[in-house]
Image (cartoon, rainbow, N blue to C red; front, side):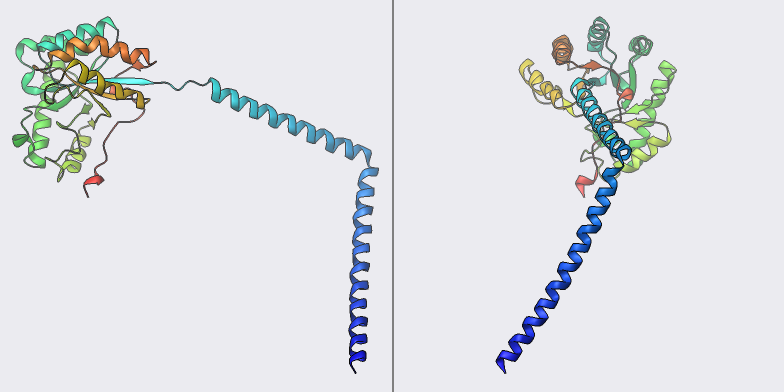
Length: 283
């Protein structure tokens, strides 16, 4: 009985093997005939070879061009010098330095500081190509940051003062202490929306001289300014208020340092996009 079963299995296995071998031979013949037919057509073979070589050369050229573009293309680096809390007597020195280096900067001004004797200077700033922006009218946080209404009122008053003196409508503004400060975090976004309706865009900064905090020194200011190297478009915060004489004196040194690193200079409204802090970090 066992022998019959074994014989039967052998026959079945042999049949299956023959079936697969036969199909394999047919497939081989079919593929071989197809290949033979292909290689008989010498024109087709030559054309395929030509197309293949042309495509390979084309890809090589594209790759080389892209490599050269990457190696030769220089990333444009532009620094945006901004000054808060002016105008003051130190602003004159700042302007003289900027004129010497043919640099245009952005000044975010305090309305109360635009006294009658300083109006001519502010007009001259606009004439020389600098951008003037709204900072605040009073710069008293307990007064302007009471609520949305008081903040918008302060900004609007400063805006009106600049228009009155220069005849130019400002297009930029900056929150005292920045747009994400703890004094207006409950209504900052609402203020931004209101100012946007007036055609003003706010700007923060990514480099700070820290020249209005504590007791700045030449060393501390230069150390803080040095962080500009981390950015292709650094927005540099400095101050030209009445207590910032050191910044005015150091400005040539600051400019030379930035220029030596291969940066150009321009006003913030020319930046690729406004530099603005996120506001969802407080949530």
